[in-house]
Image (spheres, rainbow, N blue to C red):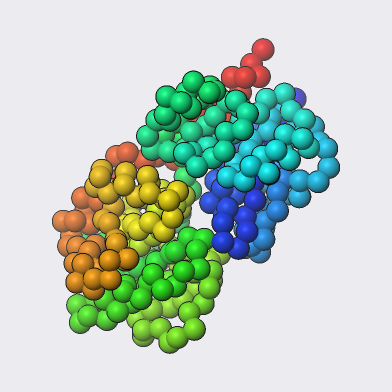
Length: 314
């Protein structure tokens, strides 16, 4: 008899997409090894709804009382956490967490940060696994292998619609040495002003993977998707928008997995120097990809499924 597992997560227009996407990666693997995997929670992004419908056995809002073997909660919303425990009856509950997750009850945790949880967390509850080895990473199709210089760049702001942050990057990209490089900008909000000729704007969505297949470099917010880009060995520059991206940003920069972008200091020269290293230095590009491939793998979902299977072993 297969084990039934339900993920509770949500994605609005500006937040939560990373939580739902990593749940969908876990669900795909779990279904492939015999689980029944379901999603309960509101998803407001059409492209992500389509992805969820392809990844889960069923998708619906959290409205009725239901019974599953395993409940997995992945959200920062304390109200949704409470509703999940009220509506879902399960034999075993896991909370996917990091330093910004409300720990309301001592559910066992899968801690998805690159460093261990604090002593306070360890005293509060059981940690089933933590760190990069458990990250549910996506493997992308790539038309191009390693390129010694950058020619096609994917730029993504994640779930934010803050376009002002990219003004410096757009201006810096118009320097003579970068004009032959093409930038593919994915955002939730289309810029109102005209974009530079070497920039193309896309709405965040599934089309990103098709464009990414033709890219050789990534500039990304330090959220969930950043780890996917690194695992697929893209030379990468990272930036942080919000407090929950700070640890990811500091980790990849300190461990030389990514170059740091600081858009907020208003210095065109600094941005240009990072672009030069990221796009034009073959030594820098090769170093970045070698380090990321030595640290990251795609086995996180398998490690997660073994945790669940061990709880139901006879």
